[in-house]
Length: 180
Length: 199
Image (cartoon, rainbow over all chains, first blue to last red; front, top):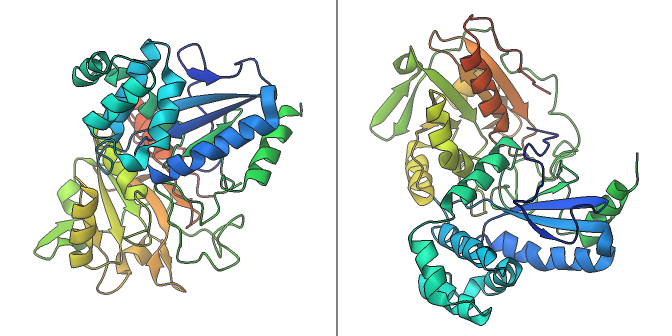
């Protein structure tokens, strides 16, 4: 519904770039097979460069598995990478190579490229070690009013503006940094 | 603030039926919000879900039903409101509710859309007389000839317990439905739920 707020506060379980103590926390709910998320990926990078340490960035999983059959294994591979300290490298790798493929062979290649043992990652994916966490991310998103991917929250409030407009997106972030 | 039609997400219709009109974003839905509110009896219907199957409201007697009116099948994006509900279906079921989508699209159109999105719940065709059921719920946009993006929860006795009208370009998500279903489960009286925001 309109004016949705984040129901699951950011915390130590989250994947964070920058500090959780930053003035602004940007949360993105994303799906690794969603082309719009892949498009949002460099926009987030631009925002990070532009606003610097003012902002912490959190990524949460929102795989729409019925329309994106590769989204869940890709998320599982990213989580397996996280367990080995390589979440962001794998996250970037997947979004930057989304168009080249997200089959298990592709995920193995991406794992190797970020310096992980592809067999170990593949094993975690096959045994769904991180599926409960991914589902938890998903349901938390649903309860917070995530209505598709990508959905952004700025300091806990759903950003319903146009995320493709970097200027206005950056403005919304810097404004959120100013105490009301 | 509301989502502006045209933002590329894996759900948002890039061209909502009124995306060129002044009311597409920021402004409330045209005219006074007129959808049926909590406490009203849900108007009956019998609509085609496939070319040879008809689904009626009476079939859901004794069960909780979510009615999701929406403007049209085939948004030019990879997902949409129905795709989200499809993904959240286990959660609706856990809360004892079933869901149907309703638009003015024909049954053949629904069949094709449903199979392309792998939907596991019925889409009903409010096709002839066009939009009659949407009208009876106050959820029809005469100017465009499509249903509003309006949600209703009907209890087992056929009473609307919650309703919500979303700006037509904004996918309302599933949070409102889940909150309302939970509050219905939590109460034992049959007083209408108070969550009926229709803003």
